[in-house]
Amino acid sequence: MSDQDPSADDSGHQTTKVSDLVEQPQLRRLFDYWCAKRHGAPIPKKNDIDPIDISWALSRIFLVDYIPGEGFVYRLAGNEIARVFGRANLKGLNLRDFVKPERLVIVERAWRRAIEQQCVISMKGMVYYGADRTGHGGRLILPLSGDSGKEATSLLGMTVCEWEHSDTPAKMRQPDVYFLPVTDIP
Image (cartoon, rainbow, N blue to C red; front, top):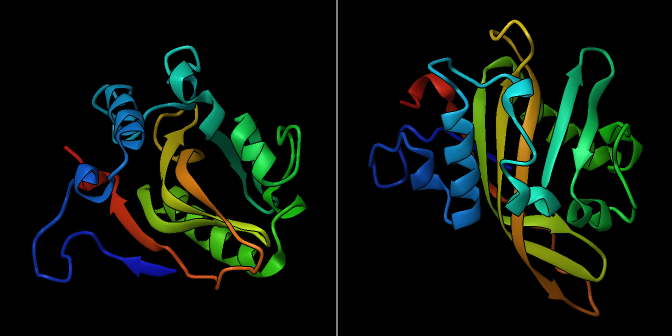
C-alpha cells in the first residue's frame, strides 16, 4: 500500500479534489452525498447518514465504528461485501474476526489514519484478493463523527470492482491509496 499525499501527483499537478482521485461514478455519488451531509462541518455526523438516501449503494457500502483498544466493528455491510468474506452478515463483527493478520495491520493502519487525522481514503487497483478471484476497481472511505460533531468515530465506505476469476491465484498487488485531509475539501 502506498501512502500517497494527493496534494501533488507524480507530474507535480496539484490535486485537492476527491473527484480527481475517484474514477467510478458510484463512488463520486457517495462522496457528493457525504459532502452534502457535512452541513458546514468538516465531516458529517454518523446519525446524518440515512440508508434510505443511498439505497442505490446499500449492497456495496459498509459502516464501521472505531472503538479504541478494540478496533473496528461493523454496524452495517452490504450483501456484496459480506459475500466477499464468505459471510451472510458482518454486523457486530470486528474486522479482526475475518481479516488475515498480515492484511489486518495494513487495513487498521489506514483506517485509523482516516479516524485520527480525519482523512478521506481513495483506493485504486486490486481492492480484493482471493484464491480464485481478484477484485479490481476503487474504494472510498469517509470519516463520520459521533454526537459531538468534532471527532471522527466511524467510517462509511464503498467498494466498486470488477471480478477476475482464475484457476491460479493472481499475484497480490497493493492498490494505490490516497489520503485527503477533510480540511482540504471545500
